[in-house]
Length: 176
Image 1 (tube, rainbow, N blue to C red):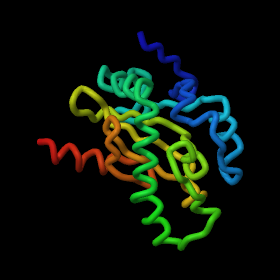
Image 2: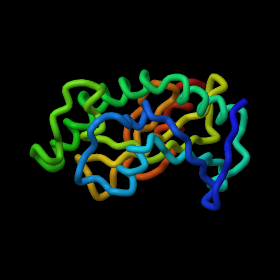
Image 3: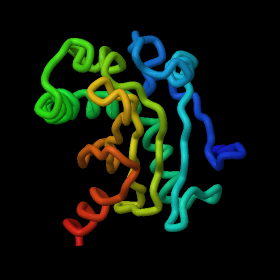
Image 4: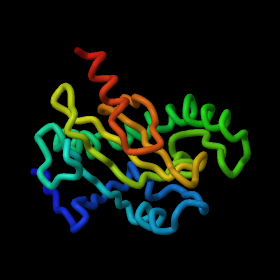
């Protein structure tokens, strides 16, 4: 049984030490609050419906949270690959390369130097009985805004600067 306890912000804190990379080095330029949360293994989880945040997640949203809990390592590998193959090159094109904005990450265990998980945002939109998720990160390539990686299960659909469902809508159009 998946127990979800909501706080006054209509979110819930889960202890997921693998996906937040609790035992791996972080980035001194990230928010000290979010780094402290990661050091404790914690991450904020929010559920969204058409009206905004909700404290009544659907079965598909609960399935997505279960997927995250059960596949943390697989998700980290997907985030690492996407960051190396797409996110870094795109942002280097925007701002140019420097060692602070783009620290060397040789493997998934080093991902926290570049991306620190802040939130898991689970949408009501779904396919295959599992909701889409936007993972919110502190991101060294954009310290001011961070980034969101939008996923269905471990498939990274792309990145967004804001919490948005455009990539989800496009993916749903492909499956109809």
